[in-house]
Image 1 (tube, helix red, strand yellow):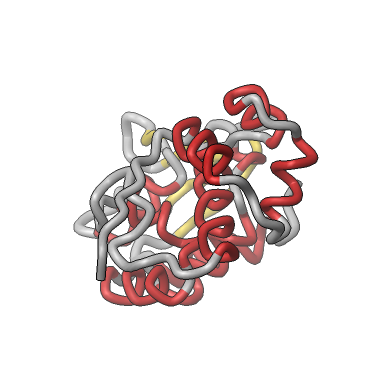
Image 2: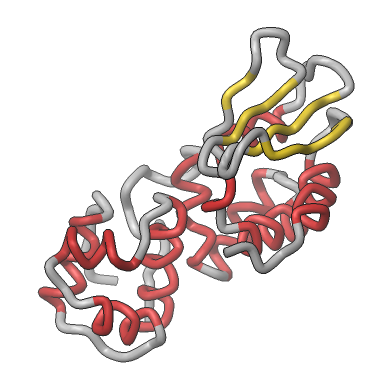
Length: 186
């Protein structure tokens, strides 16, 4: 469910890209379309936005279609756009400060794909935040994660809320999200 109004999200997008947005509409229950005033040219932030939302361009390059648009993590993306303006150095710095944004860097190939982080995750809260940001990025429900891991939705909710989890369960979640975990000494 969207907690940020669509117009706030679109405003955050427009602040982050150079190409002017002409309009936004829902094509159907779950497909969002963003129309642009002209074909985007040399707008790397728009390219990154397209990658983050798994958008598809129309043949004339004036409309970006986002399937499963209602499943986007609008609040998280709005914050990400407002805090970084899709500037690569700011995206990296934000993810260093808050690991819940690391999946966006993974998707943009700004960190080694599938790794939890290029910096140590020091707390259970940071690990849970990152894993559940990956769940949101993959557009998985808690029920789907439960089925993929064999863990109950209750135990997943508790872990998401900050309660401790057994290492074997943590590894099941990472595996279900196709993440690799690297342990090293400092």
